[in-house]
Image (tube, rainbow, N blue to C red):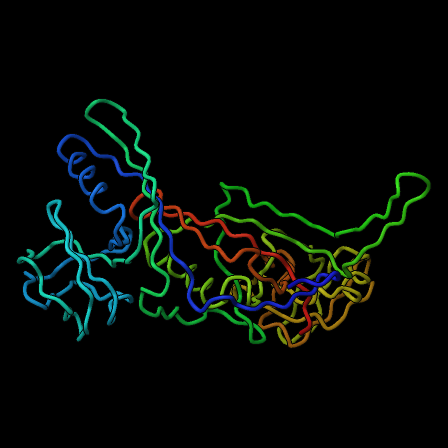
Length: 364
């Protein structure tokens, strides 16, 4: 809920996110005949769909109600679907329990699956009621599949532990894919009263501008993708706040900093007045050669020395010359601008995800 003045109250509508998948499957000859038959048979039934990017293998033959995996993954808990795929055949059983790398299944496997067979997490759900096919030749066809997992059917998922935090909030530190050219928008909404004749009146309902960043992340491997997804899950989409540093340089230093010192001198004489009145720009991120990114609260600022002198809460951890200061950026309180997290897998190991993040007022 957002008030006219731009302040929000955020309440989660559901405990678990809903999971959807879309992909294109290329099939030819006998493979396409099999896919066609399965589509006609299962389109109106609930099915189990493997999550293809996250996989491991059987470390030994699997039969009966037990299976041994070469790598234990986070999803392998009671209630999750355990999918085995080998030589064009597949089977799914629910996991009853796990001890180390040994999986005990609820049901009995229909056959003996060989060591090295692929293992995936499965989701119970439904394909879209309409499936579109494209025929490239009389022998080669592409099938577009849309799948939605049944809400509540998957077991609870526990996101990984939080990374870097500052003043109790997690910090977004994922690197941008600069090839995708991050988009930054600054908005200060206005309302105009215009009756079509005479003068007009302009009102600014927000006391602060909003900076919206749309960035793409390039991630290699399922673990790297999970790091971003877990960040999103920990913040429950738009509900919770976090810190994000600007992707660009905001301030230019004119002098170095001293270990134990509390000031930073920059070249902009007008920034002092902005910082003293801003409810958004109230913290800094400074990249130093030994300490890496250092986050500090802005205590105050005043014009001086042909620029502005910023006072911080806390002290600097090291002495650094002006040329060794890597970058100075504002550290803003923010939240996700959407409750949807989408990942596009370019290959089975390379994925991109695009997120939109908006700044909020910082009441720290």
